[in-house]
Image (tube, rainbow, N blue to C red; front, side, top):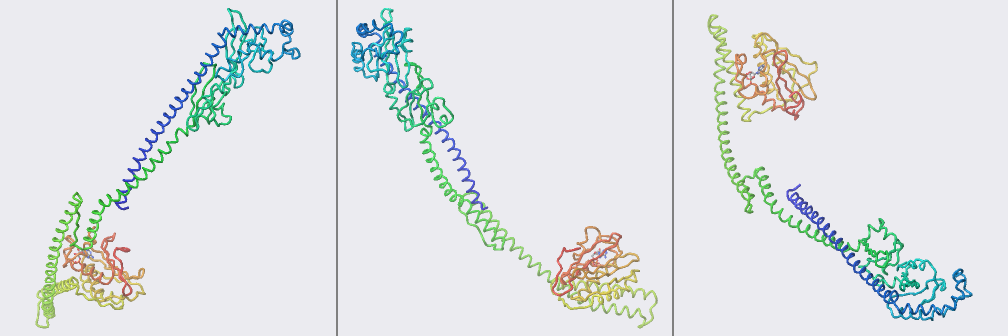
Length: 614
Ligand code: ADP
């Protein structure tokens, strides 16, 4: 991934995370605040409503006290009316008292109830009042109904429970459906005169509650015990009254409830509720607002991020381009960065490093050229000197040989021995000169190969033949172990002869006592494998590769005994390479060393270095 993208992703991730955290905190705060405000609103509205209702209750009470409980005119009207009914009472009293539920035939005429002084009084006070009084009924101390403002169902039969209870002497409130019934016993100097029952339409009395609402869903409810008496008009919940009061799961989850108790007019309860959703409605708006801001900020940060990360990564890309160009050889390339920071100073350092490197490389190149020149001169010198050595050496060798034969005059055995030494050393020198010539030709790249198809068997037999006298002299036997069918090989016979000469010569040279040098050859996986095995001193461990370096000779007494220049194996290795082959040396467990050589069978093939057995 590119640095710019990484920077951008980090920047965005940090922004998004911190912003999300902020959003979370703000949303929680907003939510809690909204819920608090919401709860407060319900409380305040509920309290106002309760005070209002209580005020209405007090108003009713005041009215009841002044017009009924403590009213002397009521009492006098009551006495007066009682007299009117005395005829009836005298006549029927015993009957009424015993069978008062079943006297429809003998009941006093209705107008007597409606138009007596007491009824008129009740009618006038209820009409004058603004309170929603449905009916006022008065019964005497026997429970006989004396007057009422509106006809009750059983207008004669007032000895009901409320009368019984009122006889005990205290005022109380009971409910008949949604009608509130205030029962007031009437007393005159500890004498029980009768009972007044005032039926008030609660719905109308608590008119404020009817019209109550908070927002869209906020409503109020009045309960008496578990029974819902009235709900505000905006309440649309079906059958939810009990749920409101018991506060079941559904209501609790979706609504906010507020219970307000009052004993003013009996043990009723005011419940104000509102949907939580409504309280949290603005919460959604806040959420979307924050979300919009979030999107705008993320886009903004992304754009800024692209801008700034480009500013940071552009110089880095310039540096990268510079490094690539420089590495690919364009040494004159330089970086130009103007950021007035560490990157600019890095660019300066890189430029001066490039200057120095360019200069050093120039010097190195010049020195290399000089060295090459010197090496060329050395090669030319070696080959010139070697050439000059060759003819005199041949003459010395030939003359020493001729003299030793005695053809030019008698030589005694001692002289013959010296002449033989001259010849042998001249021969060593000639081989050294050959090696030097070959090496310098290979070094200067002047060696030319001549590939042809020839018999490998023939070449190996020739090697054996050439080295047999030398081997015999040292007590060493050369053994050729060749398969009956050895394929012809396409290679350079001249180069291969030098290779094999070197290997076999070393085999003989480094076998100190009697022994064998075994030459094996055969086909292996489309290649020719030749092995030269000896019973000599072996190669010191870890030097199996170094022996192929020019002028390298193992630093061991036995290894330095014989004649040697340290060039043979390096020439061998270079020739093997020219032939497209591979060479390796290793020691045998039982002593002695073994040189392995692989050559391609056909023209154009090469064998990879470090391959099998390599
Ligand atoms: P030299 O002219 O000394 O033989 P070479 O390049 O042929 O030079 O060999 C390098 C060195 O490798 C030798 O001096 C010798 O120490 C070691 N060496 C080469 N062939 C053998 C061998 N068959 N047995 C043991 N040591 C060997």
